[in-house]
Image 1 (tube, one colour):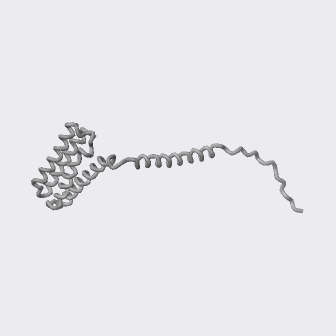
Image 2 (cartoon, one colour):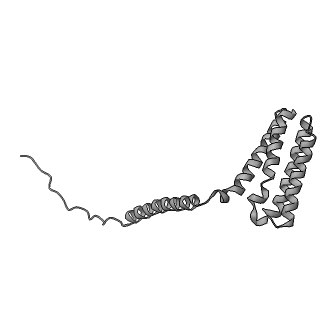
Image 3 (cartoon, helix red, strand yellow):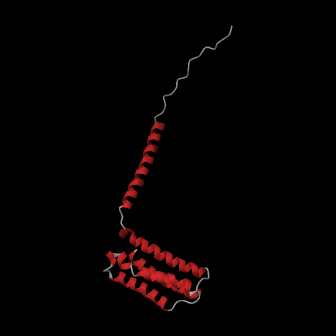
Length: 154
């Protein structure tokens, strides 16, 4: 005879908690919300025209040109052939300040800062720096002209 164990009374099981379902729904809602937010922000960004991006783009290119000039000085590449292209680019970009910031075109302080920036570059182009000290000095003067405007209008 084989003895089969008789099942005893089962312990009572607690009903499953709803917390895990709530957590899942919350996380799903969070993920969907983040995706929708990214889609909304990309849609708003795509509505911008070149006029909206122009001021930031101008400042980024100015910053890149000045940084390359400083990097050249740090790498001991300070000949006029290394420096003049950056100075010429900066001067050319300096002509666009009033177009890039039309709301500031009539502000006398802005006009003075733009003229000072262009004057600094004109002086640097008129007598190109010889040696790394001169390039660093020119870069510092350009940085000071930028900083003066940013202190008033940033």
